[in-house]
Length: 366
Ligand code: NAD
Image (cartoon, rainbow, N blue to C red; front, side, top):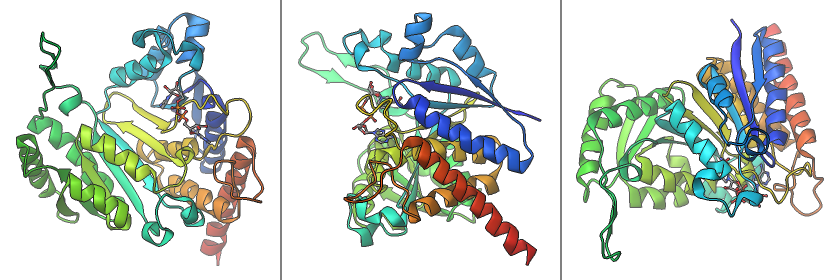
């Protein structure tokens, strides 16, 4: 059966990096004998320009009828003066809400050939591969009541979690850990917060269903320090909405460039895959964007929405091989290194992917 993928390239560098993700998905489909159907839809500033609104009805309908959505990025400086609700970014929030994903997955990997580029000492990040699983629909960002008191001098928010909300995201964390190094670090502040005590109790209950996965509870402040000093000690980090928001950005610095980071939002009606970066108007249309975040997002799509684990793993290897062979977009290049365009980086990864497959073929054929 064909896998229906709704493409939403969006604005700025979004279309450029999405093209390269499609290149890789098309290659995979051809070699795996699978059929992928792509349809392209406007979102963000591109949709405001052509259809008068950031999330046109037909774009939303296409997303809801797809097996997966692959998004580029939204946002353009020309909308900066607009009211929040009329900006391209509002369309992405509305799409995420309509799809209803409750778990945001953000892997951060230190690719060995780039270890020198990270914000950390190379020997600290060596071997680091962290997956942040962040609860996305609850907690402090959505709790009611919230607001300002009449004086304007006092403001308040509500941190609230139910057993159900914690249970469902914890299951995603443990399932993902099973596919990785079988370790979950559950992040909380149980020494201070009641919600964290509930979080800890529920995660411990869920862990009983996953005896093969090792669970540790880590206070968020300790986690932040450990992420900076010994990131390789983490596998899956299971976080509530607030802690996940902060720690996922911290984890991102392991990789060395914003352009490398993929994400997936799962658990709703349709899963959504997108690179972490924005539309980067400063480099849009110049062929300077790094497509690896988008390509790695496509690999996540294969893993979670198509159950094509082997092919997803091959893409991960191909990215690493291309980097090891010296492929660099401008954000990754050191002095004197040759800079590839967005398309050339996509081509380099496609060639590396073909080689990964050939190598496996030879190995199995011997
Ligand atoms: P940004 O992520 O677009 O860019 C930040 C910096 O990183 C820029 O210098 C940019 O050139 C660089 N960069 C980003 N992606 C890159 C890539 N793939 N390759 C090489 N360099 C890359 O963030 P910003 O500048 O704060 O925001 C620009 C616009 O994007 C704004 O309108 C913002 O609201 C929007 N935005 C959208 C998303 C999204 O669509 N998910 C996320 C963040 C920001």
